[in-house]
Image (cartoon, rainbow over all chains, first blue to last red; front, top):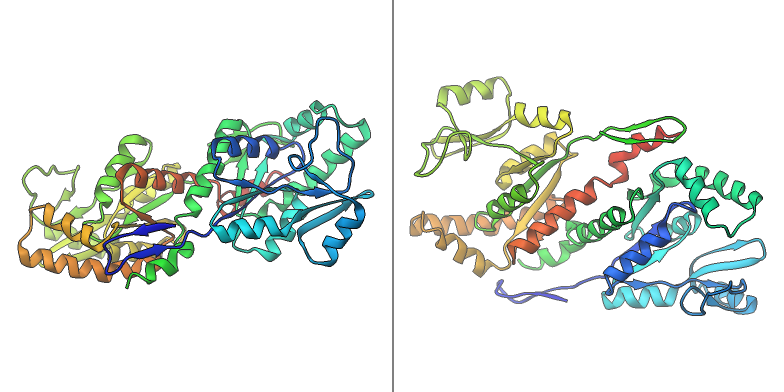
Length: 212
Length: 212
């Protein structure tokens, strides 16, 4: 809550939370940008996805994902308790709605790091969200990064790379495009976008009107 | 010009200059914010207005204003050489078009610090500009600042204050509203807005499309 004092009467600037969706093809570096952003801005809440897949080595429940059963996930689907979801091979992935909505209500900014299909599902429900697409500096560099992870087979790499190229075309459905040629610079772009969005007249309009 | 290498072919990201219009009621502090912004960002070009009024003590031609004759100003009007203009009492004030357009063409960002009526004239011609409204933290503080200048009579102060209140209602025609409760914080808001605008998909769309 931001209070402007001394106007005709005291004006309460209702601080609505921002829904910040950071998305982009696999290998563009959205994960690293979001981690850096969260570290530098501890006030931003991070949405944690739910999944039915098994935890990989080093992954922690409630930190990397909420690891839940297929039955539980399908229950959430029936209750319309997910902002977006996908079924990849035999596993579900999705964003629980409750945590996101509760934080926005409280005026907290919330960050969703999700894939492109998921982001576009969220956009249908939250036109008011801030949709940021992370672009790799080049297609060559994108391929290097996918290979560099070392977690996937040759076939999976080729598949991911092919998908990534198709996915980049979706950038035109987003509000902002940030080229991740340098983590620090790209993170500063995202920080600037969040700061600027909070100054948008369409977001503070009602409060300004109430001055008069 | 920003070059992305290694895509299917070399992509030239045409860096279009941004037209940044900083405006607000008299006493909101737009002048101080623009001076701070220009000092911290020497790449941003400042548009200098032309006027037919006499220079005040300490004002320099080509720095505060271009001080020109009434005949010259009316000549510019006939040639449609002004982006916006106003006649205040017996004096003209206006923004010469040439310098602004030349810099935008070159890819330079250009800053216009102008009053609200002028900004709205510019908006009719440049929907693509970034229109930022500087708000005083309170109406009380606004009055203090107008009085504090010490350059105007009691009557002028009352008139300016009355106008300022009417003018604040125009904020809804702008893209962004920045509350000037602290010069440093407000300047950072404006810097973030400029940085974020450069990431807007609508601004870089054509270049991203050309990747494919």
